[in-house]
Image 1: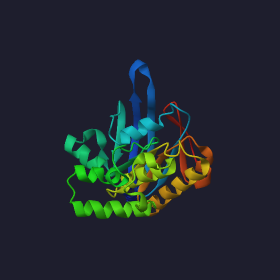
Image 2: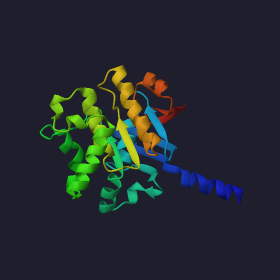
Image 3: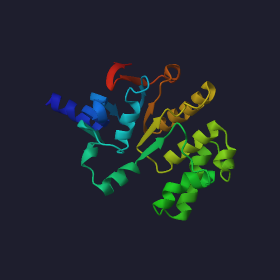
Image 4: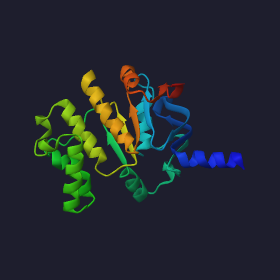
Amino acid sequence: MDSALSALRAILKALIETSKLSKLYSRGVHALRDLSLTIDKGEFLFLTGPSGAGKSTLLRLLLREELPSEGELKVAGRSLADLSYSQVQAYRRSVGFVFQDFRLIPRFTVFQNVSFVMRVLGVQAAVQQRKTFQVLKWVGLQHRMNSLPEELSGGEQQRIAIARALVNDPQLVLADEPTGNLDPDLSLEIMNLFREINASGTTVVVATHDRELIRRVGRRAITLDHGQIVEIV
């Protein structure tokens, strides 16, 4: 009975579970190989390792942009491979993604960039305005809401990208080298935003090669190399 209860508690606690997860690309290149790990609900986790280690591949699988070659990937108890098209779209709305190169739409204002997904989904205009202003205020850039991306610094653009990732109240935020184009001080500022996101209960997974930044933030880190886990600290 105790072992069954322990297993149930582990299932309820986990948000992301992979079991012998592998991703094989052309020419026999394994981006991931037999990867088994668990990420708890509300955890802040770093993925680190050299270029080509498999960090970005795992994030793409978590976003359901790609499917595993072998093994299983579950989020909130559901296998992502089994989702229908409409379920995939609903799942992606529960995930916020932050890119290294910001991916802001140049011709859109800050406000339009952040509210874009809600507009596509047909969210009421009043709700769009309220939620967009809230997240812009949270990242400290409500005063730049009518600016274009080219008028912002790199740090400001990344804050806008984070605001865009948060506007749908995601259960999971994924970030792929979000500080790769920023200096050390700005990088720590961005990480502090992720810490605040995590403190609200949102699960955060950040891929970065910056070990000094990981040390300064002080969260669990999984090191990948050639698609396999080589260290967990």
